[in-house]
Length: 389
Image (tube, rainbow, N blue to C red):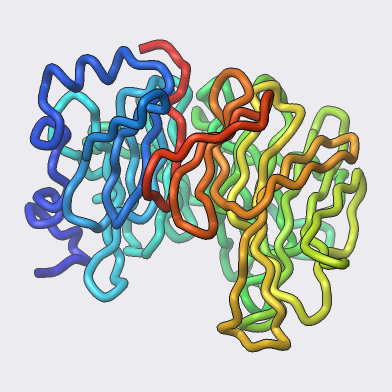
């Protein structure tokens, strides 16, 4: 079986459709539910109701590594893995019982861990393919390729040698993408680069620098860029590579209109903590591995829930790296929530889902009264969007 050739029927069979796992009537009921979460567990997606904890299996096969909801909440995009860590594919799995559809079959480069971003109306998705951004309809039947070339700057033609790209994200108008880009000449050890953003216009492919007047943070190109709700500001996590254990993770928020830059990075004092700053700063603590473990915007876009893992590299590269969960506002306040990772803020209100570090279970915390419920095992969790269906 040639998984690099996208696995064909075998991989589709591994991603059994919801109709086989839930049933048509149940699907219709689920689509009307509020407080529905998707949970990744053991390579498969489960749908879990926050109230009552009832869970139903969406896929079978154990090959999914990552997922994201469609804005309308009627489908998921999933990234899969092949045997022995070989590249899998990217699929759209609808909730109506239809088979999953491959959307990256036109990609020229097979890579592991590819992610895709949804257009605001759910009709298209975008992902990176080597030095290009691919925009594909959700059926996977039509694709447009935007090869990225940067114009020469004052120091010469930095586009020589090509570019590297992080995962793009859509602007709210659906006609533009925000893309992290670095020239390959700028990429150093451990894939560190200066993280710069550009707007890609989908009508003509034009590139425009974003927040060019702000300092560029250094680290690996982000794969998780997203806009703050109702705001031109956007955020991402990255990690500056020093060596296999010692890596300095951080979260950055950029507002191109202010313009302003906020940086949240993990610190080690008497114990794990974070620092929130409204200006560029050197990140990291010598001798420690500090790794991002997910973030999620508050519905008002003024706060962020985020997690970092902490490893004392003096104890070895395989030493424990417990993750801790925080809430941060961009005025400088931070609140520690204890052990946890992969936070997911509910579309409305003060409910925060996350993965409990000690037990690898999904928990939902009511931030208003500091109570929690346990929803069973999981490795990644996301609330169903509140958009129209």
